[in-house]
Length: 96
Image (cartoon, rainbow, N blue to C red; front, top):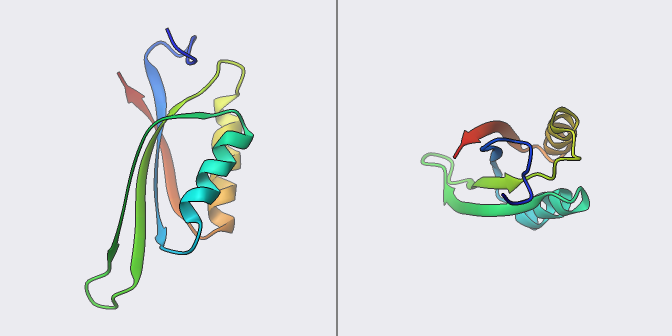
């Protein structure tokens, strides 16, 4: 078993979307690493909205969370972090 011991095959996945701005990926990754959260997989893309041509950033990140991290507290901190940067995000368990 990896760094997710105690989670019995459930790991969180973050899905985030926002206007694409400088360092949005780096900001999210820095937030995770500051809390010793490892990234197992990351998929990101950017595109333009059909009518306004605004640049949009979208990502899906699968995490490896150490057993000592309190998932509910992490979730609350992450969603507050995203609100401050105007990022729409959700965290859901992923079955392996």
